[in-house]
Image (cartoon, rainbow over all chains, first blue to last red; front, side, top):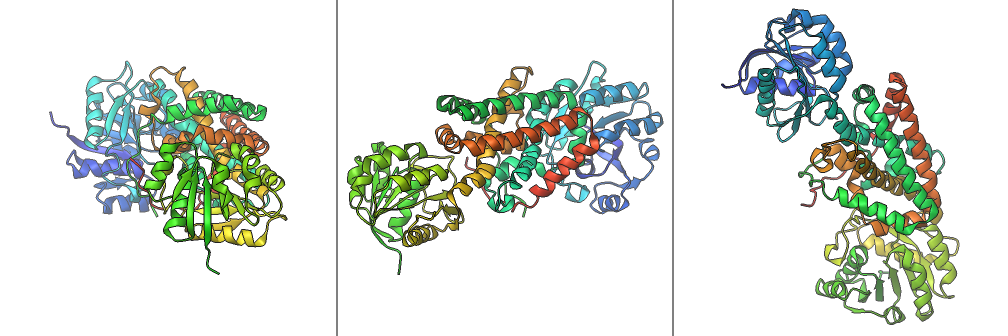
Length: 298
Length: 298
């Protein structure tokens, strides 16, 4: 059975929602894609780019005829959205999302949606430093990973269709328990973001104590790489930090311990101990795959 | 007066020393470049690559006829080197170095060298993740910065010559007090290295608590960038951490405070406070210059 939807509603036509919409239309995976949003200029851009067929401002109208509804708004808005329009969904409709946090949000969606409506959590891991549909592309997910997070309540057919939809974007789809997703992403994504934001914050403090320190002017490749993700969206990361709060706080504590250990080795002048700690970090880091060639944006 | 040396001795013909040697020879800045080292294979490679004219194993022999001696060994070896051969230097010889820490090392060199021998501290900031002359290049310093660190004891002519030598490599030369250098580099380079090494260490701990977490397999661009410099040389960074110990310990404490502040905002669920902290970091990070286009090594 080839994947085909008659109508898809995209709630939040930003970088992720807009790019997915574009792919669904260009690849003929949906007869019609309707965008739902509040920023009319952005929605008009989405129509002009051919990402969506049309837009509506009232989500109840947008979701009423949809086979698939994609929640692509900040995770903090899910609760408001579902309570507003869950009762308007067609029987058999699939609701899915693209959020960076899953556990509690998947559980809430499963509890809130009416009988007969099927929920599948998903998290495409694609560049999110730019925002808005204008930055979208039908290649955004090519080579990226998308994690789907089924539970014991997930309908197998709906899971299969959402998996096929993400595979059609060029993404590699992995399946994971939603709470395990939050632990794993908490470690490999959310903690590094905390580290980068806090490093910038510390450097701002240090600048106040070191006359002549010019963070931008003195920055080298090491600092630039280490803090690149500190330029990410404050709103998006605020929500991720709050919705994955317990894991993130626990992982920050592990990080504080690791920093404290290295600090004490340095303070004590323990050359062998420092070298051993750095060697352990280096060996683990060298197992990471090499990045694909990139040309940074100007 | 065009820059010209009759004989230059390079102590430690690695990536930095070897690349500098290569530039001095290829650009005709020195009649003869002699390499001093212990790893004969590496020294033979340096001769084959045309980086040095010849090599000797005994540094006393290497420095005896040199106008300029470049210390390009790990900073921890400076003391041993200077006490071994300082008394063999020609009157008027210039000793310079390429170390990543300056304050105490410059002070020690100035105290140790005999009257009539002139010291100029220098720190070319060039990629140091690879090692050995085989990774060297006569373009290594093109577009890079080199910090020279004169003191009240520095001979102005010697400073002028070492400045001209680094400018001839294509580097932009900045001048800075050696102790201020250690504060500034401590902030923009050494602290980010501590952060990256400790982040890898924390993730190794976290992996023990999250079944299925595969650091390499689950790593995305954010984690890869944030930890890239954790693959740097443990020996080199051990020495930098020890020689710049006081600044680094103080800056780690500022970082611990910044992390602690963000952790408490997250723990308290303070959405506005989190967003404000992230916005502050983002605004500062966005002032950094964009990187030049790079193709990562395979």
